[in-house]
Image (cartoon, rainbow, N blue to C red; front, side, top):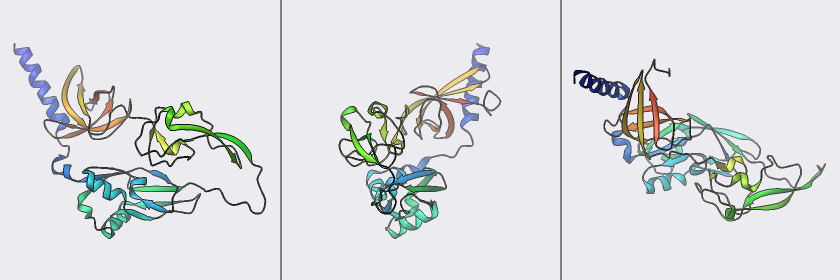
Length: 260
């Protein structure tokens, strides 16, 4: 009995140590989150916030943020860097209080604009007919692609496609932006579907030496198998980072027990 009570006390102490010192999430639930990637790609002449960042939070606020112009796009084939401060200025200009927004991810985002095909002039490069995979309909951001969403077309290109992929290669992937019908699909338009989505309920599994303790939690980031994401303890409201080991479990190691 004494040994069992000691183990329970040790397990409780492990949970306290793991989640102590992390910042509480608390009142931030009513704020929108703008997650900036390190790079983004656009096609239009205007930089819309919803096309260069992942936005979550209250639906009305998130929709309003997605329509905010972050400035003009770079010239086709070139890029420009956009900082959090520049985005905050644009939010104020759009009448949105930056205090309603939490920034996560990169401090700056490098935005690339896809080079458009130029009109024929001067020296011509030899063109060829290539098969490319295109959107069979207008696709929304976040859609998981099926065969019915795609088709193969023959297009005349000055050189071969940037990446030779079959239609099947894109089935099961998820769109990262709005894709108009007829747009040639590339790696810039899709991503693998995470096995744990942001906001999903998870089990936090804590390892320290030979002792394992579990606690209920919520994923605060999306990720695939083997990715390290941030999770929040449902009971203590504290955050910690851990590795995704399956679709329901995030594993955390104490310092000195297998992970630095």
